[in-house]
Amino acid sequence: MSMNVGQVMSRPVLATTPRASVRDIAAQLVRGGISGMPVTDRDGKIVGIVTEYDIVNALIEGKTLENLSAQDIMASDTVALDVSAEIDDALKIFKERHVLRVPVTENGKLVGILARTDALRGLLDEPEFLIF
Image 1 (tube, rainbow, N blue to C red):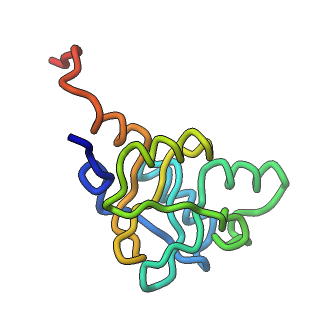
Image 2 (image 1 turned 45 degrees about the vertical axis):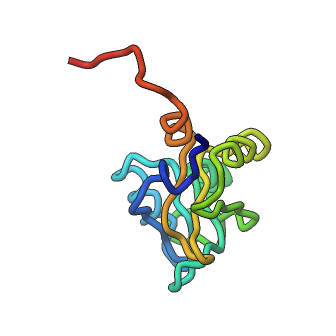
């Protein structure tokens, strides 16, 4: 039986607007222990993604995070998957685009996020490691 993205995606997903301060985004990433977040309009349509990598690049370039907004540093060529997409489709995107996460949409609106670990968890049987 094949598994679809909607079965293993993480939700709820934290997103930001294009106008949000990069400093505030960085604080949310650190606080949430996440490495990036989608950028959406108010209706949930994805317009980009901001990652730690984007923020680090801005710092290396000597930019002040308080003076930047998400739209200044976001990648706007973001790929998304529909909730009904197969996990295999996600794996191909992870490999080809070298990304850690892919936003998940339903009817064109953000509903979750699929990290590489989510996809792997969905494909694995019971692991042979135990935590006590």
